[in-house]
Amino acid sequence: MTCKQRFSLILAFCYSALLLMTENCPLSHKIVDDCGNVGLLWNCSGLNISKLPTAIPSELENGTVTLDLSFNLFSNLTEETFQQIAAYSNVTSVILHHNYITKIENKTFRKLSNLCSLDVSFTLLEKSKIDADAFSNLDNLKILRIHRNNFQGDHVCEEGDFQHDVYISYNDDDTSWVANNLNPKLESLNIKAWFKVRDSIPGVSQSEEIIKCINESRKVMFIISESFLDIGWSSYAVQMAITHAFHNQRQRSIVVIIKDGLPLERLPKEFKHIWWCIEHLRWPEDETNDETLLLNLSNVLLSE
Ligand SMILES: *[C@@H]1O[C@H](CO)[C@@H](O)[C@H](O)[C@H]1NC(C)=O
Ligand SMILES: *[C@@H]1O[C@H](CO)[C@@H](O)[C@H](O)[C@H]1NC(C)=O
Ligand SMILES: *[C@@H]1O[C@H](CO)[C@@H](O)[C@H](O)[C@H]1NC(C)=O
Ligand SMILES: *[C@@H]1O[C@H](CO)[C@@H](O)[C@H](O)[C@H]1NC(C)=O
Ligand SMILES: *[C@@H]1O[C@H](CO)[C@@H](O)[C@H](O)[C@H]1NC(C)=O
Ligand SMILES: *[C@@H]1O[C@H](CO)[C@@H](O)[C@H](O)[C@H]1NC(C)=O
Ligand SMILES: *[C@@H]1O[C@H](CO)[C@@H](O)[C@H](O)[C@H]1NC(C)=O
Ligand SMILES: *[C@@H]1O[C@H](CO)[C@@H](O)[C@H](O)[C@H]1NC(C)=O
Image (tube, rainbow, N blue to C red; front, side, top):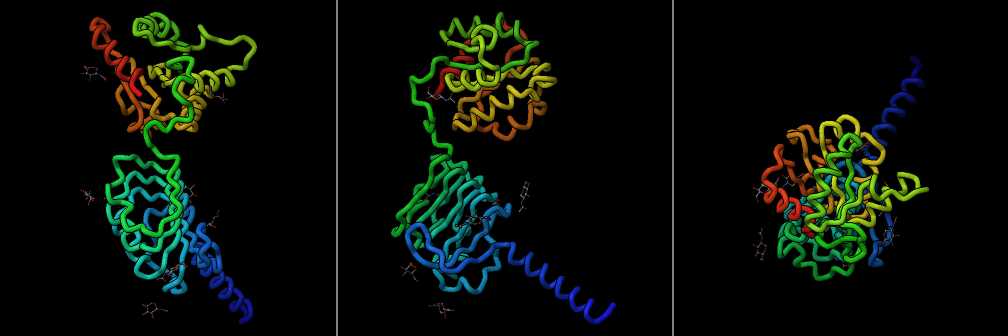
């Protein structure tokens, strides 16, 4: 290897090391934040991180800083989350949309007294998980984005919009069970159900119709049986049903009926991931205890 070759090899190595480092959280100068402050942007967006990097670039010392932490894996915000950066920089804007935040603790922003803009939209916050003093000391906050979280009543559809109480998604093998066992019970509870056989709209393609029906129903119910696991789950219709319910912020409206004594482990992983926001009911093997069953059904279907 000649000297020149060796030199370019070293150069290439240094260059890729530099790329790796800057790839971490790029810095931009002279950006303007949402409040009009001119400063630096430390952009840690989309790096699958759950906490801030501890190595803070020296350029950020005493600087006016926007922190972009969007599209990451932050799951909770605590007193520790911003402690280090708050002692080092003058943070005026924090962007945290598209994370998995379920919790904001007291004192989280205590040291970020110049914070002017905060974006915690598109995360998994619930009212009860935001501590009473979570936002205290944010005397300079002007912009707070907090939409698209799990706040109850956050439905796109207004009440009264729904033509049906429930859209039922099931595998064809369970058609007679739905018609003969489930539907009479729903009818006795005065619940209007929509399932494909009865309410098909001639001339409309099946996928269009499913979307329309789900949109016009208060709840979406999945009948999870042996045959549903075998075939139903992978079907396009089912995937679409759950996707649509999610896109419309209607995840609290998903009801799962577990048949055939299936253990929870066998449920599709899509459900397991969102188990905390699903209503479920185990269908008893013998249906003789009608009253309990009816009570449970009305609990999951008539609750808001
Ligand atoms: C941060 O970087 C991402 C791309 O990695 C970009 O989409 C985003 O707009 C940047 N943030 C800001 C505040 O400019
Ligand atoms: C983050 O994780 C996702 C899913 O595991 C992966 O597809 C993506 O490439 C990861 N991004 C980075 C920057 O590591
Ligand atoms: C940042 O501010 C601190 C406290 O005012 C000061 O001691 C330090 O020298 C400043 N650093 C720079 C780089 O200006
Ligand atoms: C907060 O999230 C971090 C990172 O995911 C985790 O290590 C820590 O245990 C969590 N703390 C609390 C109080 O939930
Ligand atoms: C922090 O930045 C804001 C906006 O640039 C500025 O008004 C404020 O005086 C700064 N505070 C400190 C302590 O540097
Ligand atoms: C948060 O602060 C409020 C008011 O000071 C207090 O009532 C509450 O118990 C605190 N919550 C936690 C989890 O420490
Ligand atoms: C969903 O229903 C609402 C209210 O009935 C309607 O305005 C909207 O167009 C529907 N969307 C779809 C995709 O059908
Ligand atoms: C059905 O209701 C009974 C009585 O209220 C309760 O004990 C049982 O756990 C319920 N089952 C389900 C799956 O909700």
